[in-house]
Length: 129
Length: 227
Image (cartoon, rainbow over the protein chains, first blue to last red):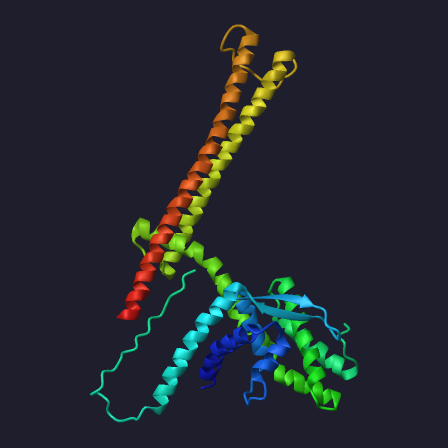
């Protein structure tokens, strides 16, 4: 079960990072605070860094070190053009998926074979690069 | 190391960053330093914003929220290993290509030793070829040099060099030898040129095979998914 939660979170957390950065630049700690906010989600803060590294590797985000008025310099992240586009696409996709989950949740569990069921097919894409 | 903290808090932070560094061994030095710096900054900011009054308690709280160094590194590991694996994969594809092309043997543990043998043979052939080419060049130039010396002082190298007279005139004979030596050197250069051409051809064949195998693999995994 732990594993399932981690998997689910990872994908959504990536989207959340892109969403946060679409409003402006952030450094790691401020991202964590913005994402978790006051919500009761026990986010292990460190998990954000591997995700940031991956997004940067995919050139969806870029970073630069900026001196802080107090304490050590901060590494600020911003969205690249590619990242902005990716965010639009992924956000649209997420809304569709969230709508599916909402529908499924409220659906009565009676036999609905009289209704035409739209079959949802999922094709896995293989990335060979 | 000064990390912006003092007393036991500094020690705790040092210990954490030390463990992080240990976990990052094997990563490029620049990546290591960058991540350590970033995590240090995170700890600093988190510490500054935590309301706990006892400092030691506060830093432990901060590090607990941050998670173990392995968490910070976790998904970098697989990605680093993936790139490593990718680098290693290519020769294996080539091996598989050679084996399938030559014998129709799929690359299994049994095929591996066979493949190793073939690779070593090919490497040995390539090396022999180049050594041959180089010795021709060296021998050609050396004898041309020796003959040129003979041209100017005929008696100088006589104790070591015994030249068979092809034509009666000794000067003409030496010049003939020089031309012969230069021809040998040219032959060596020609072999080198041929070698680069051949390598290009070999590379082309490998790439061709590699693409073919990739396509077969793709088709197979597509079938596995739909079926």
